[in-house]
Image 1 (tube, rainbow, N blue to C red):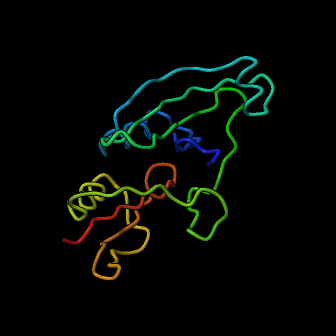
Image 2 (tube, rainbow, N blue to C red):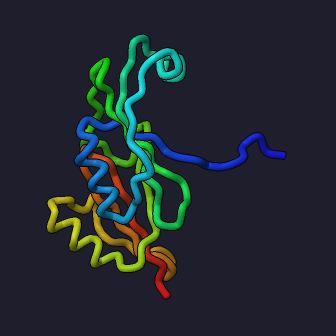
Length: 146
């Protein structure tokens, strides 16, 4: 038997919690909750003494794996590489299956979110593209070709 029971969430630390929350909410994620954490529990879990963070939990329409967005109030967040490419170590991307890839790409482009590369087709089954979202987060979108 596996020691893992369920894939619960992916956590992303961001500078502008409202901007990133709104981006994913606009893609269809539901906001499950927003809270500020501090104290012994947080200090222990993140390994940073006297930490304080604000977090938002978002859940996709199918109720699957959630996104946990967090911004550190204390200590200040450490800058990452907002222009990171797929070969940089760390969280590479978050990926979602969509119904109308081109419509979403057009909508995101109108909001200033550009493609990382182009739109590709995989073995006649998938059309896929990656967009650099807020704070450099790469969002991969895939549409099944019927």
